[in-house]
Image (cartoon, rainbow, N blue to C red; front, top):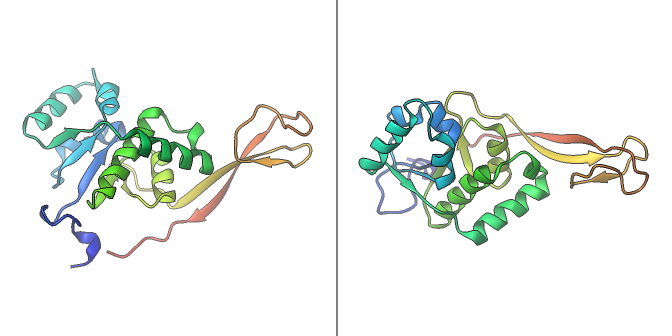
Amino acid sequence: MTKTNRLKNPQSQKSFIHVLDASAIYNGVLTHNISGKKYLPQCVLDEVRGMMRGEAIIEEALLYEELQIIVPNDEILNGIKKQAKETGDIHELSDCDLAVLAVARELEMKEFAVVILSDDYDIQNLANHIGLVCKGIHWKEITSIHEYFWICPGCGNKTKTQTDGCIECGTKMIRKTHKRKIRKKKA
């Protein structure tokens, strides 16, 4: 068995720790028989409140201790935000998306093998950039990593931060992306 198939924490039993976002819950991950504990930040619960059947499924999962709510560490969350700014993903990710990534990073730092379950391509993109494992539930995972930048069509000035107008000539900036294929690790 390879290292990627087991949790690094010796107290756990040959399964992954899963971190869920709202898209995973919308797409029925809690009704799948996915082994291992599942974690999420409070904001994910807030996003799915009122969803048909969603609250009942979540309450049942919480009752049977299959699901745990974690408040992400502020320092880790700020680190995730910084990395999102560096890749240009910050404009596409909600605060809750960033919290999901921070929870995953925090659990990984505690020596668990973490898999984020999300159909959100922006979460998958940043997860791949920062070395977190991410799997889709209903949709297949991304095949390319995107790094965003803005370019001025007037003078060619480039920046990693979104601005309304070019600081050199005032022309409206256009968002562009560098794409890079993801090399999948063999399990």
